[in-house]
Image (cartoon, rainbow, N blue to C red; front, side):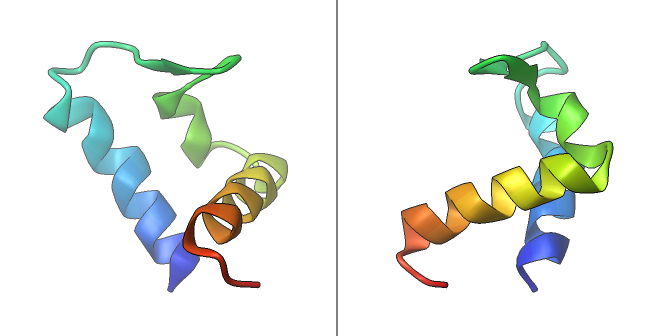
Length: 53
């Protein structure tokens, strides 16, 4: 469920933001879709935000 949400955000955030590269720290949003390592990082961040895990 979380991963699906992340993939949705990764796909739709650039559209919602007018397809401008938005930097969140060292990585642009579009990089979120690439690589399992990034997925783990983002999952950890989302767990911190939602207070679960």
